[in-house]
Amino acid sequence: LDPPLDSGLSIVLGSWIARVSPLVDRTNFFLTWALRYAPESAREPALQWIRSRPRLFQTHFLIFAWLKCGLPPNEIQESLFEWCRRHGDTFEFSFVGAAWLEAKAGKNLIQDFAMKWLAENSRSPRAHFLLASWLEQTGDINAVRCVMSEWLVSNKTLPQAGRVFSAWLRAAGEKDAIADALAHWFVQYRPSRSALYVYREWLRAGGSKTVL
Image 1 (spheres, helix red, strand yellow):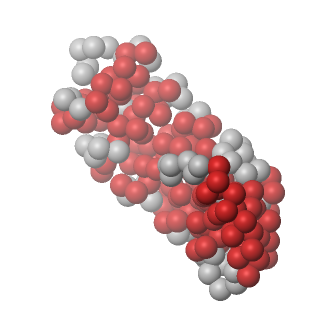
Image 2 (cartoon, helix red, strand yellow):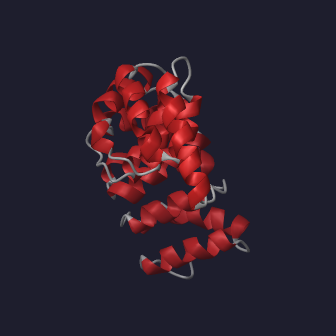
């Protein structure tokens, strides 16, 4: 996260952003940056960009920033859906989809896109971000059970697998489904702080100490 601005600088920056934002046309880099520092000042120009260019690839930068700074998801849901229809097969969708879930906006709008993307990337290390977010925010293990199994075949010893294991356990996923993969991961990362966190989740879920 960016450090907070003092009140005086925040006022000056907000005023400058309010003057410049309506003039932005070709690229949304400035608006994306502005949402991080002065979301209320950049809100209307950003919303106008998102709604007027929902199928433009670079709009995902603004969608992601909008969701991350806590602005209302419902104000951009139609635009996000249109963006997903055009770009739901791109790597960037995983970040947009995860941000939508983490904004507590519900799973229904993006579920079809998310399931399709995860199925197509089930062996890819980069799928961990969306897979973990799905488990953490929805708790729906049945929708990703096959993807989880496929992903662990190729990625069970990666550092980021720790987050996926923890998310699965917190979502009340079956311990037996990940026990062997988790044992392999734990051998490699046992000394790390992240391993301690995963181990606690395993025990909290009723896992046996003898497995790890």
